[in-house]
Structure formats: C-alpha cells, structure tokens
Image (tube, rainbow, N blue to C red):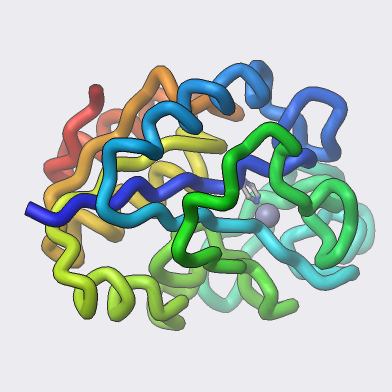
Length: 198
Ligand code: VGL
Ligand code: ZN
C-alpha cells in the first residue's frame, strides 16, 4: 500500500510568537521530521495569502479577529493577518525538514476564498490539484500531521476520506486553535468521516 505523509501548515505564523499562534505549534516539528522517514511520499502545505485577503478581519470594516461573517460560500471565521505570501511568517518553521518533500501545496491565494483543506478551497469546489497528484502516484493511505488540528488538518482529513483514501491523523503531532469547542467538534466530524485518530 503506498502511503503519504501530509504535513499541514507548519509555518512560523502558526507557531508561538506568530501572527496566528497555535499553542505548542513548535513542539511537533522534531517528531514530524522523524515520522517523514516512514512514507513513500511527503507533501507539505503552506498557507499563502495575498495582502488584504478576505479571511482577514482587517479586510472587513468594523470586524475583529474571530468574528464570523457570511461569504458567498458560507460562514467564514475572520483571522488576524497571517501567512502573507513571501513573508517570514509564511515560511516553514526553520527546523522542519522540508528537503524530504516531493511537493508543496500553497493554498489560500485566491483573495476571495479561504482554503483550509489541502484538497479544496472553502467553496468546497475549487481544487488544489493534490488529489490528482496522489492518485497519479498510486497513494492509497494518507497520514496527517500539523497545524491546526481543528481547522486545516480537520478539513484536509475529511476531504481525503471523502476522496476515497484511508486516512489517519496523528493527534500527538498536531496542535489546535480550539475556538469555542472547535477541537471536540472537529474530532467528532473526522471520526464520522471514517478518519482514524491516532
Ligand atoms: C489555518 C486559520 C486560517 C490553519 C489557516 O492552518 O489551520 N487556520 N488559516
Ligand atoms: Zn490562513
């Protein structure tokens, strides 16, 4: 069975002192590096927003980070500015072993649509091409690690399961934002999609 490790958004802005810091985000890096040695294929994702992206609170008059607004594609949580294309915050954590990756998927570049999942943007329609990449390589099993458990890891794991892969999430190599119970909800949603939480 061909396996892939999908490493979600291990970037400076999601680590302590970053613009959208996830508690303990830096703690998972060395375990992820070790884990990479066991897979046929390693893919990294990189949240990669233009300035003024529609997921940023500053792009919406009178709104604050963590407010929720209605977008044409549904509800959208508003975030502090983060992972601006080419910025230090958008770079991978400096200890992440990026050399092992065969592909890097950049997401969230469309100014009008956020993209949590490695497979589809938040309109649930626009594809990143990653499914084609994995299917072409004959990948059947996907293991996920990274940031954040309840947003980008969650959306990516659910999409992977819906696309027909056997999917597992290593929770010890993830960290969560946990906004209003979003972690517990995400864990239940992932399990309901058939994702194994390890
Ligand atoms: C993420 C919020 C906004 C994530 C990315 O990587 O989980 N969360 N952009
Ligand atoms: Zn983002």
